Length: 68
Image 1 (cartoon, rainbow, N blue to C red):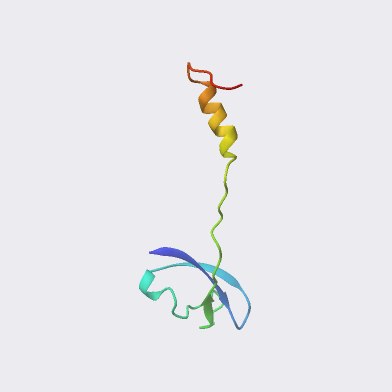
Image 2: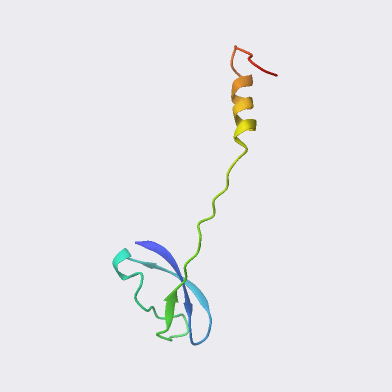
């Protein structure tokens, strides 16, 4: 089971629900009792650290100094 986000097309309320993967695309009941909840598609939150900075920090802790 996974947590999915839905929005009711009748009252426009957004809600989250734990649903099995097989039933994730089925219409869900919103907290107000409407049978109009459709799943929302969202992109995952992805962050990327500055690789050069983390590499320099790791290399500065080694006994071999190749750069400053």
